[in-house]
Image (cartoon, rainbow, N blue to C red; front, side, top):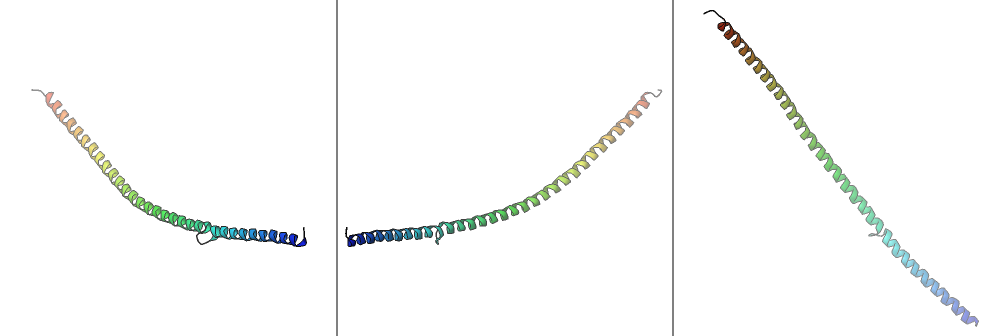
Length: 121
């Protein structure tokens, strides 16, 4: 082998190495665009994170709204229970007083009937 052939081989090897290096650089640029470009994975993840946070905040606001409606509904239910309890106590008291009054009337009527039955004729 002559010096020119060896030199030509070295230049060919160097040219192939540079070609591979340029190809590798292009692949790295493409990978970089995929990862951190405008529409890359990291940008999409950031967008998904923002969307998730917005949905979580909307859900939290809706839960607070439902909680407020539930409290108002519970307040109305408490008033209904209190009014029903008071009315039931008044009805039970009226029933007891009515039964006692009827028993007293029956007892007095029985006393009057018994005294007239034992009276001399």
